[in-house]
Length: 234
Image (cartoon, rainbow, N blue to C red; front, side, top):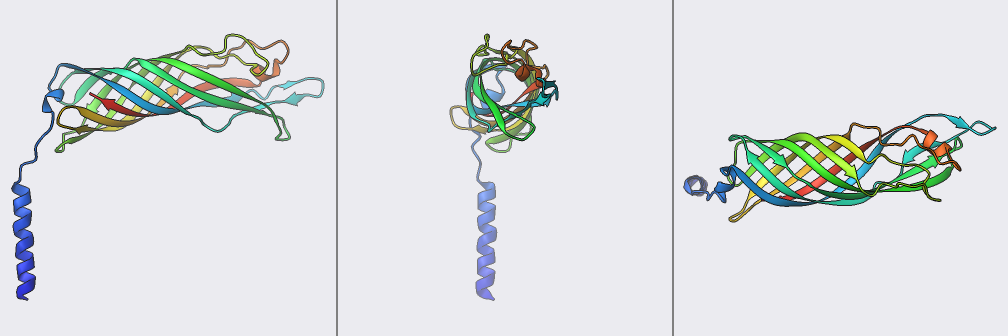
């Protein structure tokens, strides 16, 4: 019984000691700056939401069904400009570049792969977003982010090739939403963030290749999607 009381007493005293110990709040000035800057590096996966047209072609009324194949990892970098609005809200502009690739498979009605096309993209990103920061907990601070992103694909295929019989439109506007956590070190703020982007425009061009028009004609709508994991340094 005496041993149990001794152990309980030690635990209570230790808890009080640790509770009274001050936690050093790192790099507090970054949240009080009217304007600050940084940079971002990260990885992404690009996807398409494809709506097949279900159009037939040829004398035998054949049909092609498009579908996205395995997702490939991409890469993105950006520069951070952050404007403090108040204690909990910031306006952020992160111009940058996103690189990635999508593979589109075309099946016949029997489920056989007729063709596979690689669609490479190099996007110029111009995202503008609002960041809502929760109350800081010691040296961490969770947040939500939402906004729009104007993207232009610099690597889109401008001409048909023997491997690619569809063309993509370069311009799109995305809606974005994400979550993250700010971690405060002694000299900078490091953040991890996941974000989902949804394109609002139909990316497929109505122009069809003369030698193989069935590929472009098999797609009614093609909307871009992107999942991003970012590391911010501010």
